[in-house]
Amino acid sequence: MGGMGGMGGIRPRRSVAIASVTALTLAVSTPAGTGHLVAKETSTAAGAVAVASGSGLDPCKIRGRLGVQMSEGIPTPPGYSRSTGTVRALNLMIDFSDAPGEGSAMDRFAEFAPQTQKWFRTSSYGRIDYRPETPVTEWLRMPETFRSYGIERGVPFEPGYRRLVQDMVRVADPVVDFRKYDLVNVLVTPNAGPSALDTVLSVTFAGNREAPVADGTPVANASFVYSRQDDGSGTYHETGYRVLPHENGHVFGLPDLYTHEGGGAVGHWDIMSEDWGVDNDMLGWHKWKLGWLDAAQVGCVSAPGAAEYTLTPLAKAGGPKLVVVPLTARTAYAVELRTRAGNDVAVCRPGVLVYRVDADVDTGNGPIRVHDARRDSGGCTRSPNVHAELSDAPLVRGETFRDTRAGVTITVTGTDEAGNHRVVVSRR
Image 1: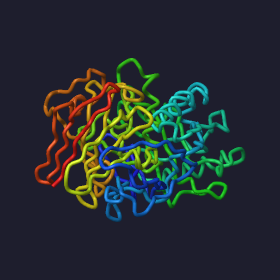
Image 2: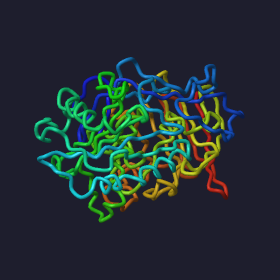
Image 3: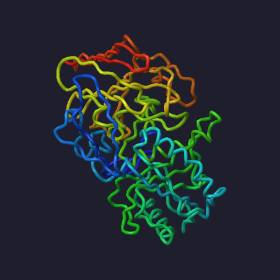
Image 4: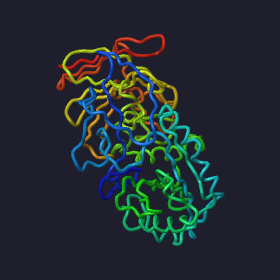
């Protein structure tokens, strides 16, 4: 369910939304050492973090051209919600006369919190204090029928969603101070619209410059959640919430990573690719982009030669996490260590994940592509509704990734007792 720049269209599998600009900047300074990353613990203040100019990481902060829809470039331009510090999420549960709320509104809220709160705390290493709040504990009845808003998969913000937001603000405003919140989650009664098994209506409008104003504040970053995706595993109550952290990823400026082939570009390695089924984390690139990694946890291989890096598991707080190899001003390889821990419960082959990031590719068109170390193997996962082919994509000790055209070689040379992996990255 996506967010994108300009007026929305339709992506396969999910709706796309308006996203003009993004609000995140990242703390970046010169990494220590000559090849080994040295981690340092720092606290992150609420709100965006300034980017240090002249950093040794500057060559790795690839950027897309103007007009790319939700570019993977770093830093993310302003306009989206902050992704560090205290983030207050307003949750409004809404229903309609032709789709009255099923059960209590707070039961609907409980489907997503505190699981979403815990997911963000785990993924960010505590860098984001995500606070879902419900100043209104009953269903908010909209003045028009659901049918009258004309909401279907892929519809743009105008005119139906604009009318819905205006009506929602009008009904909620007497008891809600919109100025207190960083983002809005609209939890629609699940009987509005078709089942998520038939079509996915959930959508985010992020960085929306044309959004209606409430209490002097534009409702510019809003996620709408309808029927949840059931993966058929019988764990719906455990997995259904994951649509919300995916949608909130858009309000933080992250694009959709699924493509026309579904999860075929990234698989289950990032919640912006597959948010159904069992838990999965975010890629290290996204954690850097969101300000959840310090500069000293990122290595930048921009000069010719070879250097050895130690990588600690992405799921574990602290330690070196990401190595970036810039190819052009707009593309780079990223290298990280994934293990079965934290949010990554579906990992069946731990190892070093290599993927290509292209800041010039729009959301939903494959801005990130994972290298599959075992192409056409069928994968190793047996978890339901997880893209199996890429589940065994990581490199293990003794294996090498080569891009002969770019002159880049990445070899996993060893591991230690703590489970950290050593990689040698060379470029001509």
